[in-house]
Length: 116
Picture: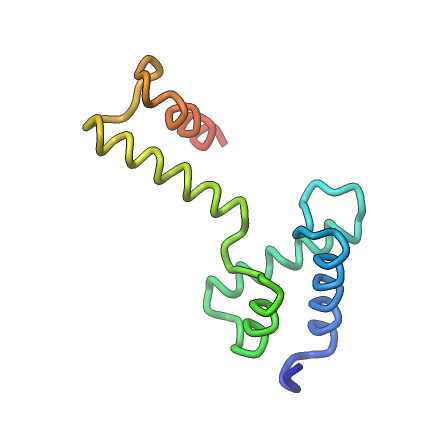
């Protein structure tokens, strides 16, 4: 690993890599294990910093090597559902209503995200 990467950061990235190998998934925010929740929070921080342009190339390279993306699975799911909503609007020419046969899924999603 690059010498510019602090040892504590390197140690946490190694814990994350080990977690991925052992469990075959990324840490979850609602995990029973405090260790897993801490790893989830660390991942969220890395994504935030990466999106803000505050991650150096060495850290990005280490993260990318383990399949880490600056978009979380939750972000990807949100984007997918938003794309679905945009398609329904483009096809119908208006926001889907509850009764619109082809818009119920997108409408349900819209209700969910606007209530948060």
